[in-house]
Length: 147
Image (cartoon, rainbow, N blue to C red; front, side, top):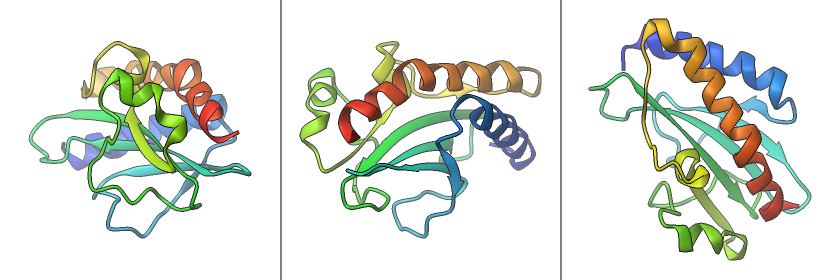
C-alpha cells in the first residue's frame, strides 16, 4: 500500500476511533509480533489487554487494509506465530478459553471479508465502515472474553 494513502487512512480511522471507541487509546508496542506499518489501539481490562490492530496489506502490492482484534491475559501484545489465530467459526466460539488470540473483524461479523480495498475517494467510508463493525461486533466480543 502506498505510504501516503496508508497514512491518510490511518488518520481517518484514528479520528473515528477517538469518537466511537474512546476506551481504546493509540499505543506503540515493541514486539516481533507486530508487523511493519500496523497501528494499534489498546484497552487494559482487569483480566487482559485488548488490542485493535489496523494492518496494511503486508506485501505492499494492493491498497487494502484489515482490522484484527487481539487479546492477552498476560497483559502484553499476543505472542502468536499465526495471525489471525482464530480462523474458523468453531475456533471463534471457543475464544474465551484461550489466553491469547486474534481474529479479523470480517470473520467475527460472519461477513467473511479479510482485506478491504482503500482508494483516496473511499477513505472516509471505509474507515466509518470498519469502526462501525468494531462497535457492533468487535468490542462486544472482547467484552465477553476479557471482562
